[in-house]
Image (tube, rainbow, N blue to C red):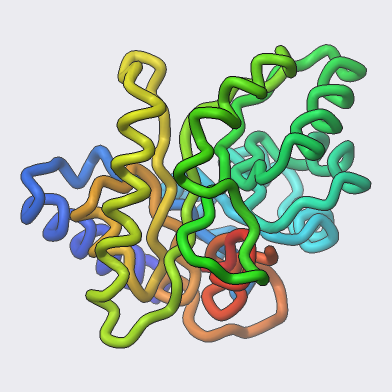
Length: 251
């Protein structure tokens, strides 16, 4: 079943990309595992079918990686939840990428811990698409200024944007939000050779996100169903499909 679900997601990405004159192969899938059965996650990692794993909670990632054993090294782990500064050190130990950098304070803390660890890290800047107090992020109009301020943190490499659209009915209403995110992305990350990433779109709206230029989509429910355990989720405060849109990433 899990591979049928993945094939369906990939086909939908391919079709959406074709509608926009893009290649489906240029869109990566972050498997948000909040609702994933351990057996399904093991199958995906053993097959090499999914390059990225998305988690939105530190404690869930710790447990998952222990349960997976050596398999946990077969994917790039991306943190897609709201990251508190006091958990930044542990997040850098557990995750290969932080996709939800949403403040200069967090950038400062991450940079300090990276210096202690003798490392650098690519990060995505979370942008705020809707005026909700519950959603974290940098306003689209302030992305350029924020990037300029980040020059003070040499251990961090801004590598693109992460966005969460509001939940709207019909879902087509999210298109202007994704379009605005893409425009901000293209303006602030023009260096294509650096391979910047635009992470937007979850199970409910990823086809629109692909049409509007997403290079990463965060998929939980469409891969793993509505949940077997309270494990992981699709995108960022705690990023899952129902939680995905509250703050950081909850696909």
